[in-house]
Image (cartoon, rainbow, N blue to C red):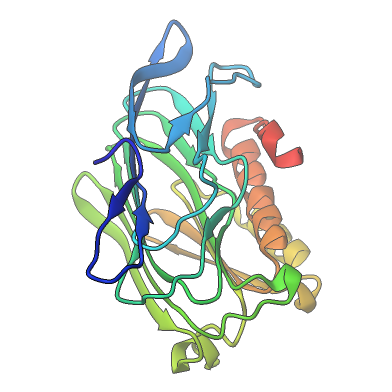
Length: 289
């Protein structure tokens, strides 16, 4: 891995600048607080100091990618391990994958999350794929015997807010959740702009935003029913669904509103925490700025 951008010299006169960045982060409980156990980085990935906005010592951590987006040939790798304690990780802004000219090159983000013990809440803001990207998004989660997880991932095709439609480009996405080496959830998505999967009723239905949320603890059925009734009250805001399998609660969103998706997932996260732990979590301040 490289700690600074380099100039590659292809046969053509065109110069490419590739960012390859890696962050290795480990957290553990110490003296009633979750603290950094190890933190190292190569390239433009950083973390801020930990925040403690709620009782119990849970740490809030913000992941920073100073370039602000991923371009041709970029590779980001994020490795997070929670050895004990409770940690919430989020991002201060949406991630962006910018338009590329050469679709033989890949823009790649790899996330490896390991929760040996304790609780990890991985709640980043959405990832926006500009028209014309060639993006690979891979996430693998390893859970210990009694560890807990709240996870969401929201992907936006194109830029609906400024009228940009995803008319060209590709996305490959994987999500794997394992507990003690046993797979609980394995999902793969591969689509190209305008293909059958992106347009069909069994696929994206020409919608721009897809989201998934995974919880290891499920709130009561009444709470889930109330949440579904609330978030699906207006069909124009997209559709949320919930399923349960292998000890996981899996919520999904399909629509055209990334903010509505994140807000809906946040409502379920808060309701679940309050039902299972007796108190609602503190939402990161960065979400409100």
